[in-house]
Length: 386
Image (cartoon, rainbow, N blue to C red):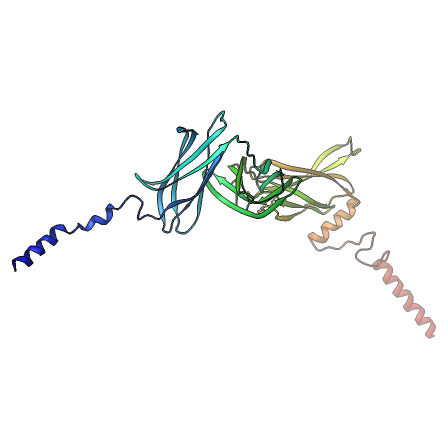
């Protein structure tokens, strides 16, 4: 009995406390990690992944110059990761601040941190100014409000993927990828439209990341900043003495919420040197447009334009009221003032006034003439009966 009691007391003393599981090594129970990373001396990107939702994380990033065993930190940045959804790859982008870079070896060091706890660490080594130049050369990169284009030149025949990124701050807000692209001997331009809405007057970064295939894989990237603007153009105009219309075509992923202003001026004298007097001006809202959308806007004049020559001016105003485009044309009306009055009566009070063109009856035929003719025929028939 004493032996059993002694063994029981020994078991109680040696058993670990209930909170012992919390003392596991840092990051062992956490699934958030740095899955991929890339850098050159212009920019870097890191792809994060977690099997469970995470919040309030941060990335600590270091650019290090390596010369043998000597390492020097050239830049340090911290990027906040407010939320990391489960099973979703999230990419963060940053831009180095390095002046007068020297040729040599460099290293990107990154660590994912939660509070004081390091969840994941990774490194990426690269060289700057080495003799092993890429098989592709980026000649030009042009991002704008509706998409991004990159001009590439091959140093030899190449097969590659292009990833197009739209970056807002450190967040990649849109990305699309074109796989198995090729160049043989001549330069070419590769483009992609943005598939997301942009905010007017906001600065973004357009970025391309190009991965080259065999004989050995390599990655090159390029970035360019741009300011998103609402944009549209007038593609077609119709006009006559009764009204006008204009077709507006969207040229931006910034929602276009502008207006059209139709102004008619009567011209006296010659077209080149005559005087102009404003007849009518009408402002009409254009339906909301995005890139490659089009809408036709119509207006009717308050009164049909009488005989003469008129100048029609159409202004396309942007979201901020700025003039994006102005178009001018001529309206030549052959409508006499009398016909104009008749038309107003037709549409205004229902009174029909026959015109010289006989729009409301047989040409040259009047009510009085018709009655006179019927009387004459009746008299002739009565004489023949006698």
